[in-house]
Length: 137
Ligand code: NI
Image 1 (tube, protein in one colour):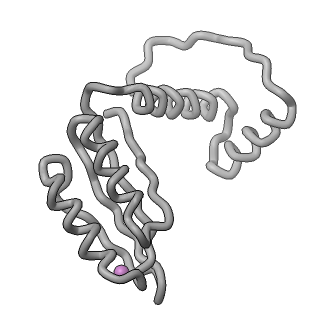
Image 2 (cartoon, rainbow, N blue to C red):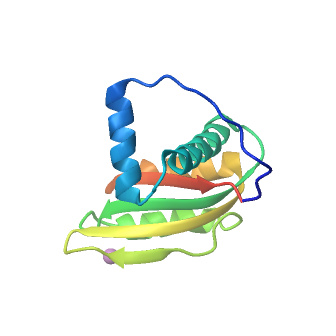
C-alpha cells in the first residue's frame, strides 16, 4: 500500500469496545493501535463498497461449510458453479470430518453476479454457513 504521509485523527470510543479492539489487535499481532485501526478502516471501506455496490466488479472467495451427508448436495453445488463459469472456474474441497465439507470458491466478475451465485449456494439444503470474502486489489 502506498502512503503519502498520515493524518492524525481523534475519535470517541466506548471503553468496552476499545478494550475488545485492543485485545483483538494483540491476538492478531499488531504492536501499535494505529496500524490496527488502519487495517480495520481498510476492511470497513472494502466491506461497505461491497455491500453498497450494485454495479462494478469484485474479486474474492466464497467459503462454504456444508453437510456431506445430505443427499445430492455436492452435485447440486457443483451444478450451480457450472452455471456461473464466467465468474468462477475452480474450487478447493476439504473433507473436514465424517459429516462436514468445506469448499472455497474463488470468484471474479460483476458484483451482482457474485452476489447471485452466493445466494444460490447459500439456500441449498445441506449448506450450514456461507461467507463471502471480497478484497480490493
Ligand atoms: Ni468432502
